[in-house]
Amino acid sequence: MNYQTILFTIENGICIITINRPDKLNALNKQVFTDLDAAIDHVNSNADIKSAIITGAGPKAFVAGADITEFAGLSKEEAMALAKRGQDVFFKIENSKKPIVAAVNGFALGGGCELAMACHFRLCSENAKFGQPEVNLGLIPGYGGTQRLVQHIGKGKAMELLMSAQMIDANEAKQLSLVNYVTTNETLLEHTKKILDIINSKAPLAVAGCIQAANAVYDESKDGYAIEIEVFGNAFATEDMKEGTTAFLEKRKADFKGR
Ligand code: COA
Image (cartoon, rainbow, N blue to C red; front, side):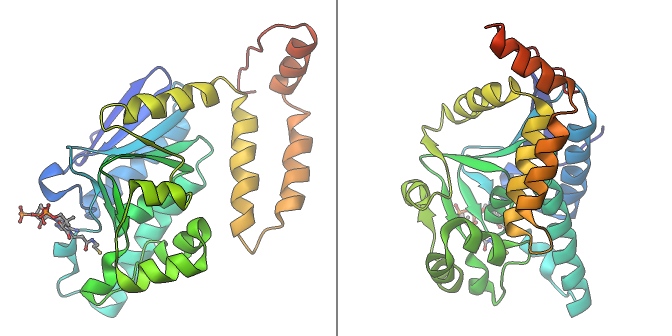
């Protein structure tokens, strides 16, 4: 795959997707969305990849937002299409069958915060800063930020951040459960990989089922409890469930095949 704005590497079953526009603080332009879209498809179709990390290039930013230079002169319809495109790519991340985790290595503002929130969970380095500064530009978030920020940190605090454009630092993000762990800048990727190594040792179809069922909590068109019953039942028809239960009874480590 020929990516222009991201780096795509695979290491020990973990794909690392690095948004690579450090001179523009990794701002999300159209090409980044094209590349990210293709990269998520690649993650889900490549059997060598079990999970993925999204991070940003350079020491300063994860992603400092949508690329503001692309906003100039957009009509209402074009702006709506831009938001729909961003939302579609972020839904693809959220609904990926393989885990996708954000390693937030600096500013995660606007579209950057929205990208991190679309991932299944987040770690960040000590220098990370999160925020939705769109009201500074006379805008609101367009890539799901008004919805996911409320889901992640609750309505009151989300309303404050959305309306005030205030940034929060890594420790506050941890207190608000926006991130699971705060690490040093140097250990962010290693820590993220360690968590994924554990997840990657589990039954892949069961991991995908957890993602599907947990995502249903936030989808009003779906009955999450009914999905849980269905996914639970489907698991009984997998080779991995037989292997997992047999291995437990035989007191050995399970060897999951993703079937
Ligand atoms: N879109 C386009 N370019 C951006 C960008 C964005 N969202 N965020 C940063 N950049 C560019 C800057 O224009 C600058 O480019 P230049 O060197 O060609 O002038 C470069 O990235 C470095 O940014 P700079 O502002 O000089 O860095 P800083 O350390 O002084 O400030 C931020 C860092 C993150 C506070 C600041 O860049 C910022 O406020 N960015 C916009 C955040 C935002 O509003 N995001 C939501 C967009 S909807």
